[in-house]
Length: 223
Image (cartoon, rainbow, N blue to C red; front, top):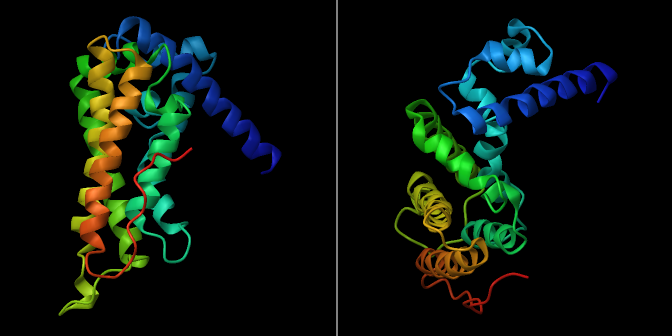
Protein backbone atom coordinates (compact mmCIF):
# COMPACT_ATOMS: atom_id res chain seq x y z
CA UNK A 1 0.00 0.00 0.00
CA UNK A 2 1.41 3.37 -1.05
CA UNK A 3 1.65 6.50 1.10
CA UNK A 4 -1.43 8.01 -0.54
CA UNK A 5 -3.52 4.94 0.22
CA UNK A 6 -2.23 4.84 3.79
CA UNK A 7 -3.21 8.47 4.36
CA UNK A 8 -6.66 7.89 2.88
CA UNK A 9 -7.18 4.91 5.17
CA UNK A 10 -6.03 6.93 8.16
CA UNK A 11 -8.48 9.71 7.30
CA UNK A 12 -11.32 7.22 6.88
CA UNK A 13 -10.52 5.60 10.22
CA UNK A 14 -10.30 8.98 11.97
CA UNK A 15 -13.73 9.99 10.66
CA UNK A 16 -15.32 6.70 11.72
CA UNK A 17 -13.65 6.92 15.13
CA UNK A 18 -15.06 10.42 15.61
CA UNK A 19 -18.55 9.37 14.54
CA UNK A 20 -19.17 6.32 16.72
CA UNK A 21 -18.88 8.01 20.14
CA UNK A 22 -21.32 10.69 18.98
CA UNK A 23 -23.82 8.08 17.83
CA UNK A 24 -23.47 6.11 21.05
CA UNK A 25 -23.95 9.19 23.21
CA UNK A 26 -26.73 10.98 21.35
CA UNK A 27 -28.33 8.37 19.09
CA UNK A 28 -27.97 7.94 15.34
CA UNK A 29 -30.84 10.16 14.22
CA UNK A 30 -29.82 13.04 16.49
CA UNK A 31 -26.27 13.38 15.09
CA UNK A 32 -25.63 15.21 11.82
CA UNK A 33 -22.83 14.57 9.34
CA UNK A 34 -21.70 18.16 9.91
CA UNK A 35 -21.21 17.40 13.61
CA UNK A 36 -19.15 14.33 12.75
CA UNK A 37 -17.03 16.40 10.36
CA UNK A 38 -16.43 19.03 13.02
CA UNK A 39 -15.30 16.43 15.57
CA UNK A 40 -13.06 14.73 13.00
CA UNK A 41 -11.50 18.05 11.93
CA UNK A 42 -12.52 17.70 8.28
CA UNK A 43 -15.12 19.21 5.98
CA UNK A 44 -18.58 17.75 5.47
CA UNK A 45 -17.70 17.08 1.84
CA UNK A 46 -14.68 15.08 2.97
CA UNK A 47 -16.90 12.90 5.14
CA UNK A 48 -19.17 12.21 2.17
CA UNK A 49 -16.15 11.39 0.00
CA UNK A 50 -15.40 8.48 2.32
CA UNK A 51 -18.92 7.64 3.50
CA UNK A 52 -21.69 8.26 0.92
CA UNK A 53 -24.42 8.03 3.58
CA UNK A 54 -24.67 8.54 7.31
CA UNK A 55 -25.51 4.84 7.70
CA UNK A 56 -22.13 4.03 6.14
CA UNK A 57 -20.53 6.01 8.97
CA UNK A 58 -22.19 3.83 11.59
CA UNK A 59 -21.59 0.53 9.79
CA UNK A 60 -18.10 1.48 8.64
CA UNK A 61 -17.04 -2.18 8.34
CA UNK A 62 -20.08 -3.36 6.45
CA UNK A 63 -18.12 -4.46 3.36
CA UNK A 64 -16.05 -6.79 5.55
CA UNK A 65 -19.18 -8.16 7.21
CA UNK A 66 -20.94 -8.70 3.89
CA UNK A 67 -18.03 -10.69 2.49
CA UNK A 68 -17.05 -12.66 5.57
CA UNK A 69 -19.13 -15.83 5.11
CA UNK A 70 -18.32 -16.00 1.41
CA UNK A 71 -14.62 -15.60 2.14
CA UNK A 72 -14.76 -18.49 4.62
CA UNK A 73 -16.36 -20.74 2.01
CA UNK A 74 -13.93 -19.79 -0.74
CA UNK A 75 -10.83 -20.27 1.40
CA UNK A 76 -11.82 -23.57 3.03
CA UNK A 77 -9.60 -26.61 2.61
CA UNK A 78 -10.34 -28.90 -0.37
CA UNK A 79 -13.18 -31.25 0.50
CA UNK A 80 -14.10 -29.36 3.67
CA UNK A 81 -17.78 -28.86 4.38
CA UNK A 82 -18.84 -25.19 4.06
CA UNK A 83 -21.28 -25.61 6.94
CA UNK A 84 -18.52 -26.85 9.26
CA UNK A 85 -16.21 -24.09 8.04
CA UNK A 86 -18.68 -21.32 8.88
CA UNK A 87 -19.65 -23.03 12.12
CA UNK A 88 -16.09 -23.38 13.36
CA UNK A 89 -15.23 -19.79 12.43
CA UNK A 90 -18.23 -18.49 14.38
CA UNK A 91 -17.66 -20.68 17.42
CA UNK A 92 -13.96 -19.83 17.53
CA UNK A 93 -14.88 -16.13 17.48
CA UNK A 94 -17.33 -16.72 20.33
CA UNK A 95 -14.78 -18.64 22.36
CA UNK A 96 -12.22 -15.87 21.93
CA UNK A 97 -14.76 -13.12 22.80
CA UNK A 98 -14.33 -11.47 19.42
CA UNK A 99 -15.35 -7.79 19.83
CA UNK A 100 -17.04 -7.92 16.40
CA UNK A 101 -19.69 -10.19 17.93
CA UNK A 102 -20.63 -7.61 20.55
CA UNK A 103 -18.78 -9.14 23.49
CA UNK A 104 -17.41 -5.85 24.79
CA UNK A 105 -18.65 -3.09 27.14
CA UNK A 106 -20.00 -0.79 24.40
CA UNK A 107 -22.08 -3.52 22.76
CA UNK A 108 -25.26 -2.83 24.71
CA UNK A 109 -25.33 0.82 23.67
CA UNK A 110 -24.36 -0.05 20.08
CA UNK A 111 -27.29 -2.47 19.77
CA UNK A 112 -29.66 0.00 21.43
CA UNK A 113 -28.74 2.70 18.93
CA UNK A 114 -29.60 0.32 16.09
CA UNK A 115 -32.87 -0.66 17.78
CA UNK A 116 -33.86 3.01 18.13
CA UNK A 117 -33.24 3.91 14.47
CA UNK A 118 -35.43 2.68 11.62
CA UNK A 119 -32.70 3.70 9.16
CA UNK A 120 -30.09 1.55 10.89
CA UNK A 121 -32.44 -1.42 11.18
CA UNK A 122 -33.10 -1.18 7.45
CA UNK A 123 -29.38 -0.98 6.68
CA UNK A 124 -28.72 -3.98 8.94
CA UNK A 125 -31.22 -6.01 6.90
CA UNK A 126 -29.54 -4.90 3.67
CA UNK A 127 -26.15 -5.99 4.99
CA UNK A 128 -27.57 -9.42 5.87
CA UNK A 129 -29.13 -9.77 2.43
CA UNK A 130 -25.90 -8.86 0.66
CA UNK A 131 -23.93 -11.25 2.85
CA UNK A 132 -26.31 -14.07 1.93
CA UNK A 133 -26.10 -13.19 -1.77
CA UNK A 134 -22.29 -13.23 -1.62
CA UNK A 135 -22.44 -16.61 0.13
CA UNK A 136 -24.72 -17.95 -2.60
CA UNK A 137 -22.16 -16.96 -5.23
CA UNK A 138 -19.34 -18.56 -3.25
CA UNK A 139 -21.27 -21.81 -2.86
CA UNK A 140 -22.05 -21.83 -6.57
CA UNK A 141 -18.37 -21.44 -7.40
CA UNK A 142 -17.17 -23.78 -4.64
CA UNK A 143 -19.96 -26.33 -4.02
CA UNK A 144 -19.86 -28.87 -1.19
CA UNK A 145 -19.56 -32.62 -1.59
CA UNK A 146 -23.05 -34.09 -1.45
CA UNK A 147 -24.80 -37.37 -2.07
CA UNK A 148 -25.37 -38.18 -5.78
CA UNK A 149 -28.82 -37.20 -6.99
CA UNK A 150 -30.87 -37.06 -10.18
CA UNK A 151 -29.58 -33.57 -10.98
CA UNK A 152 -26.19 -33.31 -9.32
CA UNK A 153 -25.50 -29.82 -10.70
CA UNK A 154 -28.44 -28.41 -8.77
CA UNK A 155 -27.98 -30.37 -5.50
CA UNK A 156 -28.10 -28.61 -3.20
CA UNK A 157 -29.36 -25.35 -4.63
CA UNK A 158 -26.74 -22.78 -3.57
CA UNK A 159 -29.30 -20.12 -2.69
CA UNK A 160 -31.16 -22.45 -0.32
CA UNK A 161 -27.99 -23.67 1.35
CA UNK A 162 -26.73 -20.09 1.68
CA UNK A 163 -30.03 -19.12 3.27
CA UNK A 164 -29.77 -21.93 5.78
CA UNK A 165 -26.14 -21.20 6.70
CA UNK A 166 -26.61 -17.44 6.88
CA UNK A 167 -29.87 -17.90 8.78
CA UNK A 168 -28.25 -19.94 11.54
CA UNK A 169 -25.33 -17.52 11.70
CA UNK A 170 -27.67 -14.52 11.90
CA UNK A 171 -29.95 -16.18 14.47
CA UNK A 172 -26.95 -17.05 16.64
CA UNK A 173 -25.83 -13.42 16.81
CA UNK A 174 -29.39 -12.21 17.37
CA UNK A 175 -29.88 -14.63 20.26
CA UNK A 176 -26.57 -13.56 21.78
CA UNK A 177 -27.71 -9.95 21.56
CA UNK A 178 -31.12 -10.73 23.06
CA UNK A 179 -29.64 -12.54 26.03
CA UNK A 180 -27.11 -9.83 26.84
CA UNK A 181 -29.68 -7.06 26.46
CA UNK A 182 -31.96 -8.94 28.86
CA UNK A 183 -29.24 -8.88 31.53
CA UNK A 184 -27.53 -12.24 31.10
CA UNK A 185 -23.77 -12.11 31.52
CA UNK A 186 -21.84 -12.14 28.24
CA UNK A 187 -19.96 -15.29 29.30
CA UNK A 188 -23.14 -17.23 30.09
CA UNK A 189 -24.87 -15.99 26.94
CA UNK A 190 -21.86 -16.91 24.83
CA UNK A 191 -21.66 -20.46 26.21
CA UNK A 192 -25.37 -21.19 25.84
CA UNK A 193 -25.56 -19.73 22.35
CA UNK A 194 -22.40 -21.53 21.21
CA UNK A 195 -23.79 -24.92 22.25
CA UNK A 196 -27.09 -24.33 20.50
CA UNK A 197 -25.36 -23.01 17.37
CA UNK A 198 -23.15 -26.08 17.18
CA UNK A 199 -26.20 -28.33 17.32
CA UNK A 200 -28.03 -26.32 14.63
CA UNK A 201 -25.06 -26.31 12.27
CA UNK A 202 -24.46 -30.01 12.93
CA UNK A 203 -28.03 -30.86 11.92
CA UNK A 204 -27.63 -28.91 8.70
CA UNK A 205 -24.29 -30.55 7.97
CA UNK A 206 -25.67 -34.04 8.63
CA UNK A 207 -28.54 -33.46 6.22
CA UNK A 208 -26.26 -32.00 3.58
CA UNK A 209 -23.99 -35.04 3.54
CA UNK A 210 -26.63 -37.74 4.11
CA UNK A 211 -25.68 -41.06 2.55
CA UNK A 212 -22.29 -39.85 1.32
CA UNK A 213 -20.50 -42.26 3.60
CA UNK A 214 -18.58 -39.45 5.26
CA UNK A 215 -17.96 -40.07 8.96
CA UNK A 216 -19.82 -37.81 11.33
CA UNK A 217 -17.65 -35.39 13.26
CA UNK A 218 -17.40 -35.64 17.03
CA UNK A 219 -19.66 -33.12 18.72
CA UNK A 220 -17.19 -30.72 20.33
CA UNK A 221 -16.55 -27.00 20.28
CA UNK A 222 -13.40 -25.77 18.51
CA UNK A 223 -10.61 -24.62 20.80
